[in-house]
Amino acid sequence: MLGIREPGIYGSVTLEGVNRLLTEKADSLGCSLSVIQSNQEGVLVDGIQAALGQHQGIVINAGAYTHTSVAIRDALSAVKIPTVEVHLSNIYQRESFRHHSYIAPIAVGQISGFGANSYLLGLEALHHYLNQK
Image 1 (tube, rainbow, N blue to C red):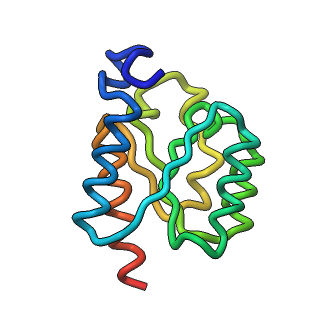
Image 2 (cartoon, rainbow, N blue to C red):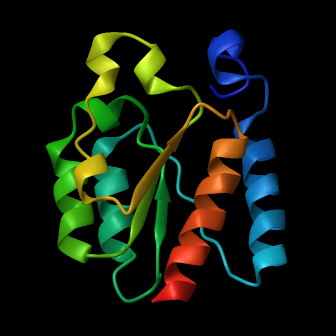
C-alpha cells in the first residue's frame, strides 16, 4: 500500500520506487541486494532465516510488526546478521505504542523519519558498518 496509504505520513513513493532507489544505491556502493516484502509475519521470519549464510546484512522495515513481533526479533537475533531498522515516518513523533521497537535493541542502528530516504540511509549505514568490521 506504499504510495497509497496515508501519503501525508508515508509519502507518495511506491514500493517499486523504493526498490528502484535501493537497487541504484546498492549498485553505487558495489553491493548486491535482495528484497522481500510481505504482510505475513511468518514469510518475513522465513526470509530472515533464509538470509543466514547468504547475506552480510539486513535492512528491515517491519512496519507494525516492529512494535508487536517477538518472532521477527527472535529470527533476527538467531541469525546474528547485522541489521539496520528503518521507518519512513519518525515513529517517536507518532502514537505512543509506536515508540517501542522489539528490533531496536538487537539492531546495529535505527533510522526513521526521512521517508523513502530512510531506506537509502539505512543501506548506506549498513554498508559502512560492514566495511568497518
